[in-house]
Length: 295
View 1: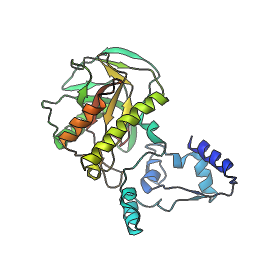
View 2: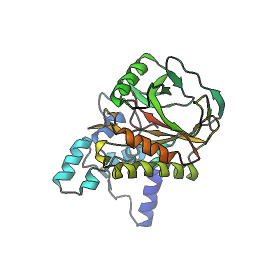
View 3: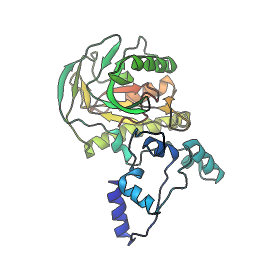
View 4: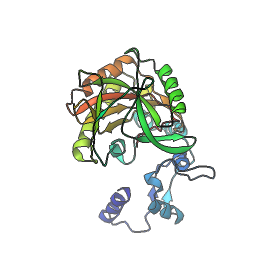
C-alpha cells in the first residue's frame, strides 16, 4: 500500500524515475529487519520492502537519520529548533492504525475460559520477540488480587510467567468490561480490517490521547499504542481494546508506561461507553518478550 500511494503521488505530480525519495528511517528499523550483520528479521518495515531496497541500491533514497536511535533523532530535532510538539510526539506507525487491528480467518465461538495458576490464555495470538527472534504466541490474562495497579510488580511477574510458559508471549490485566459477570466465555470473530473497525479504534485512540493531554501525562510515556482485537466475552460487544503504554529510550527495549491509576480508570470508563467494546485490557509486558506493537 505504501508503494501504491507513492506511485500515485509520482503520477499525479509528474515525477519520473529519477525522483529521490526521502525517508525518516532510524537505526532500529534497520536492525529489526535483519539489515545488520548480526541481526535477524524481527518484523518488516514499509521503508525496507523490496521495491524500496531497489531504490536504495540505485542511490535514489535519502535517509539522514538512518544511523540514529530515536533519542538521538529527538536531540537533533531540539538542536535544529523544531517545535517541541513535533519533536516529542509519540511515535506513530507509518501504515497507520491498521497495524494495530488484529484479524482472524475463523470464528471460535463461546470458548470456555479456564484459569490455570492465575492465568487465562486467550484464543488469539500476537507478535513477540524472545531470544532475539520473532514469536507468534498467545496473550494471557493475569489474575490480580486488587483493583489497584502496581505496575512495576505486575511487569516483573509477567516476565517471570512468560519465561516459564512457552505458550504465551504477553500478559494482560483486565481494566473493565461491559458484562456484569466474570470473563467465563470468549468468542473470537472472523474479520478483516474494514472502515467500521478502523473508526472504532480511532475513537478509542482519541480518548487515550486526549486524556493524556488533559491529565498532563502525555510526556510521561514514550509511546501509547491502542490495539483492537476481535474478541468478545460473555456475548457482549464484538471487540476488545488493549492499552499498551510503554517507556523506552531507543525502541530496542521497553518497559510498561507508569501512568496513574486515575488515568486508566477514566479511560476505561470512556472507552466502554462504546457498545461495540466488550472489555478493556492493559498489556503489562516489557520488550522483550513482547514487542511494542501487537501486529
